[in-house]
Amino acid sequence: MRDIRCLRMLDLHGSDGICAVLYLWDYVAEHFPTDGRLAGISARDIHLACHVSKESESFVNDLMECSFLALGDDGVYFLPNWREEQPYVSQAEERSQAARLKAEKRWGTKRSEEAKPMQCSGNATALQQQCSNTNSNAFKSPPAPPSGGEGEVPVNEIAELYSETLPELPKPVLTPRVLRDIKARWAAEPERQELEWWREFFGRVRTMPRLMGEGDDKLCASLGWLVNRGCMDKILAGQYLTRAGGVRQPLRSMSDEEFEAMRAREAAELEPG
Image (tube, rainbow, N blue to C red; front, side, top):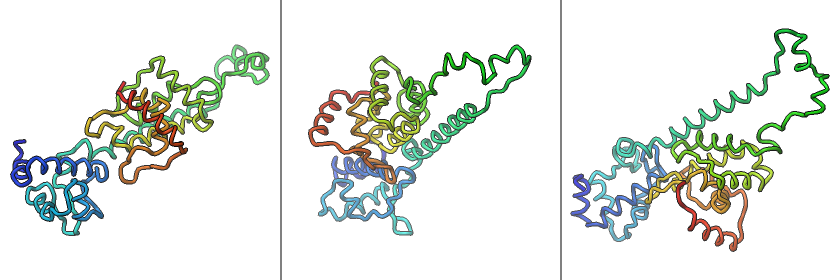
């Protein structure tokens, strides 16, 4: 509270002025996290974002006088020194891009290695039975299905996708309950039985500030929370606000009864870990 800007707002508007600044920061972090420029936002919109009544016509000017807000030459309001004062929020998209590139590199390399044909080398006689297409053992013991198919659920690969796409969230802990929930969510819908679906799902979580620990309570989601049935349903139904430009298209709809039941489950289970 020793920041001179805060002291000025406190002098002008009391504690309500400080709360209004916090509301403004929260709004910008959600909708304009990268550069703090409020493109398309008017002075009236700023009143609404700060929870200030429309009668306080001088409030925007007071924000500018206290250096919490500025107006650019192009007529766009912005928060001065946003990237320096809010480095974690402003670099969210950069972290997302780095995570996407890392995931694409890892899984692209893995696919390339899996696509390589088996090479037979060395003593041809010794390796004949291992490399021959006519080896009778191949018919007696067919190979196991690839990970991600109709066989065993690739829980380790799903946990790796979670870590690579959401490196800021808690590291995955594959407890018996988490393993059970992943297998249940995998089996619930045919489209979920592809790793690409899980990559998209975790990517969607990145667009939701509340789940990334950017809410007032700083709580964030974990792998165990994300694969809980009620929590996953709420994410897929588009019930969490996203940043500007984020995906928010529901994959399924829920009845009122399902939604109320989900809210009751979430109230009891929204805890990191």
